[in-house]
Image (cartoon, rainbow, N blue to C red; front, top):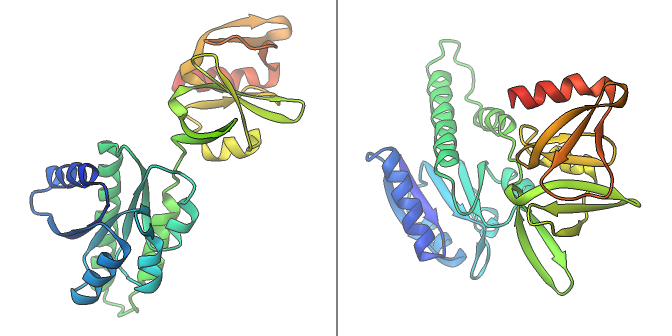
Length: 261
């Protein structure tokens, strides 16, 4: 497989190359480009690669500009330190969206999706029906099966903006119509999302909607106990103002989530 890498951080590019080649020495890194202009120049002068790994934020702009100015048909695996570009990425042949630092297991899963794509493509080519090759349909089916869950949240606090790893979150709380995130260090910040929004973008294996007020992280749960009226009381690793109680109708579902998570 011929692979083009678009990445303006030297260390990140080297690490990515090493991870890719570790999966299959037969992979061929055809070029590593660090800007919009150099990427466009390479694409205009060479045959299209089989796969592109692309950072999103480059020194001279967003890499999306490359694919808007030079449309391609090969799949793209986007890598970025920010999680706010997922929708745009999947509109531009994106087949996976990996947040930095790149997790090798997720990279492997992304490459496996590429193999699924190639296998389906080969089968389509060899069908005896002679049906037209539907590349868009194949790509769309793979994109639909991939749902990128957030691994960080962008926090605006006072005069600063910084990423908060989801792995540091203990819970989300609604207070007076405002959503707060509580970290394992006991710090709290306002986040713009509602609990409903957060439920959609966070891995349901890691977070549980205990009630209307709380969305709780599995890793933060210290213990649970039976509570009045056959409800469940959750104790987490940070102090919160009100008790986290799971209602009787939801208690069985919660306990099943805890057991099978």
